[in-house]
Image (cartoon, rainbow over all chains, first blue to last red):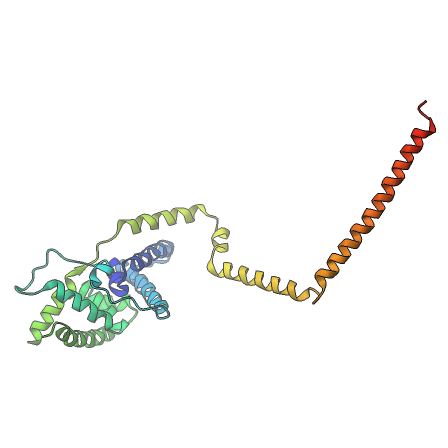
Length: 157
Length: 114
């Protein structure tokens, strides 16, 4: 829940407020949960819907500043167990990726976050976002094309 | 080349994680406990829609009362009327006081106590 909200909103406080609201919603709607989708899908769907509402409201507000470290302001951290290619400037690459990710259309960004960052299977991610597996594949394909090109540009390769 | 880029993209995307903040759970638990204690109608009254409707009704009522007041000179009329009422009341009181005083005097002078 935190991973999705923070990656989508890029603002730790706002994302945590969304998660808090989502927890209350989950609690109040728990009686209506029938288990047809699975708990994780259901909770992620609630968070995704709230993030969409927040992003819609944000259209009328000033855009977030182009901060120096988008990972820190989003409340995201680098997995310490991750192994990196030798010579890879991981921090620089991750910051560049975060900026490029933020420029993607919302639907593509949601798909990348759920599948590539949180590791959800395509079908489950599709259910969480209220779409089909086919639509998810298409969104991911387009998103990854853009990410590859823009990341290369951002890293000056 | 593309395979290498894909692998790097996957590695970068999955290398980031969000540590859950325990304060979020604490706040959520506190809000749930507060909701349990608070009657539903209090919650309903506290909704933004209800508050906005109340504020709108207040504005309409104030506007209506301003419109219903007679235009121009109302303050002066009210002052005059008040003054008149006070003057009348003062005169009446003076009459009453005078009458009472006279009666008291009359009683004193009548020699009734003697």
